[in-house]
Image 1 (cartoon, one colour):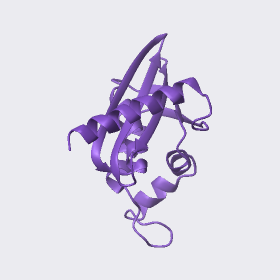
Image 2 (cartoon, helix red, strand yellow):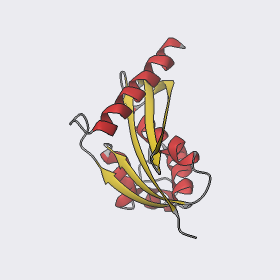
Image 3 (tube, rainbow, N blue to C red):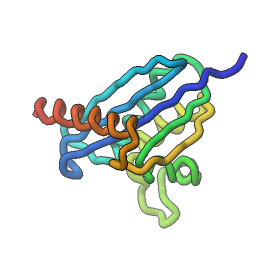
Length: 150
């Protein structure tokens, strides 16, 4: 059986780094769209970028072919260039032996990536890409909601 093709667009935002942050994602399958967002009262931008991808992938109920669009070089490069796999293989240490940041989220994301065929697409942030702009709005909303919970 052929895998379903799903497009996922993600973004993270943080007011201060660390500070209140949010994430947003759009999932698109067969003409249907779903928007999701969330946030954390004390976080970093990179954690929110990772959270957006994780939350979107967790919604997929079966293995899919995913085209993932993100403006985060941190997320895109760590997956495409194999850095995250190397960090895990080295006990969450980078090549210079320093601890890899966000190991908890990377572990969760790498496990989710194993279920799917994922093609990573970097998009320039704040450059008029409609889905990236919408994900940014969702991420800001998530950050505002997290700030309101303080």
